Image 1 (spheres, rainbow, N blue to C red):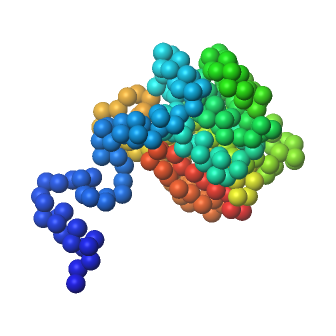
Image 2: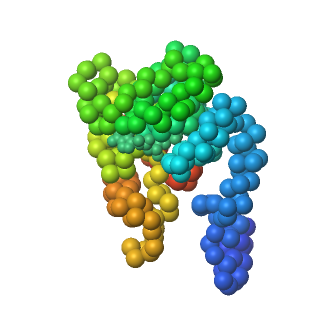
Image 3: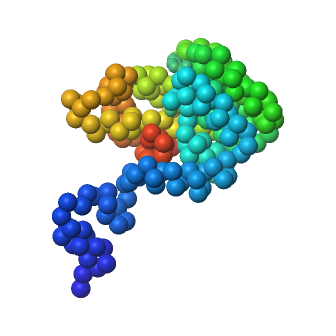
Length: 253
Ligand code: SAM
Ligand code: CA
């Protein structure tokens, strides 16, 4: 006798013209913008802390607002950090601080986030919101490019294997270089999250597809990163279709 799954597959195959995304139970990216909106309105916005909502609204008025972490991404980070009991984290790529605030709210009162960005001005837009929320004391902001800052950390043996979590959301052409360093800074059992690993969906676009210039420029770096992470024996990975794709890496050796 055919299983329910086989019967379902057969009925889908018979239904000509129906895409894989329309199959009931097909586990893949969201089917529509309406479904994404449903998630935001049902599960994200009603539970978004007031401070995150305020920062999201301030950031929406910024000319580079497209760079901000989405509200569902922020909610995911916040819950993940609580699940793993993170106390000490790194963030590379702060912008106005939405993911940083999501992190700061999740950490215990004596938790610490080493946050790096080449641009202090944008961080200072979000800082008053973090102060009002009573979490700014957890943030140690360093202005400058991430790589030399990480190299500086690596020079002190105390820092090796001392971080519970790292979130990378900066220059995509350096993710591989961040990985080389972060794998030594995060403890065994700790987690590194790489953001934008589906890169606007361009990872599956044909090379001649129309793409914004910056999407095309960074696409190959993201493709290389995804291959390198999948082949790295030092980590377990899971690539999640949250936001623009977040790949979680758990250090195992
Ligand atoms: N996580 C942020 C949020 O939740 O709003 C968004 C980060 S935004 C996509 C990328 C940030 O990376 C920008 O603020 C940019 O200034 C920063 N950036 C670019 N190159 C960098 C580098 N080499 N080192 C550190 N930060 C860098
Ligand atoms: Ca991002």
